Length: 288
Image 1 (cartoon, rainbow, N blue to C red):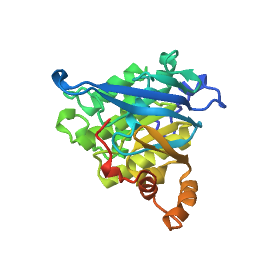
Image 2: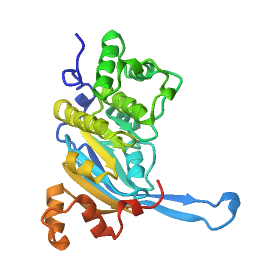
Image 3: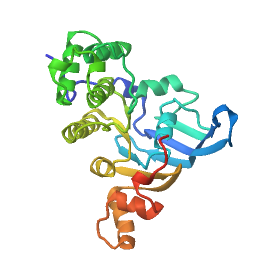
Image 4: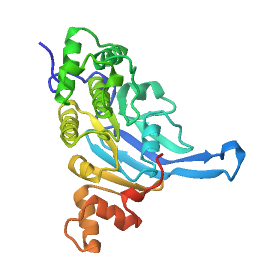
């Protein structure tokens, strides 16, 4: 019998984590990038990608990191996932410092991003089999479980053995999401996970996020510029603008706080963002 995502015991990474330890603790981190002109013609540009940000994510929380392109969202996710080193401040994942305890942090996390990497000549089934073997999982049951997860995300079995390069970008994104879910992360970092997906597929992914959190003690960090998606999924949200934290609270609290200023009882997150920044999401700067 093949275990479903809801049935499978995925507690092995969390066994090393104390229940009272926050999923993530970020303390006054900053990151600066230096953009040098091509062929040294023109001025060097200093970009403050993240500026003196602090926050804590509780275990089991779905925490949204929201902002326009260029706001610092992806930079923040990369620092949490050990891919970037902060210039200042500290980042901890379940009590492990991302710089001093990199191996322990990597055991506890997985990341889905818009630039998900695959072996494009291999099929979805082969890519998942390879990824899961790296986590010590193999065999017929694991293969069937992979197929079941992909089917729930809307990937037909007829597509499972086609080369990934022949599938649409949205379909490839679903395979990336399945790969992350199947490795049983205790902290799942979703960096624009539904970009390129049709509305039905977006709903499938959103349901999966709740299944993972509600049945497997997982914590989710959702990095997105889709305010409606964040409002539907997140327990708390953090709004970023040009690398600065401009608001952090539950969606109902933010609505209650800024509703009177906006003249409405229930403003949207996008209306709150525009109120705080003077710009819409589409007016954000270039991609990070």
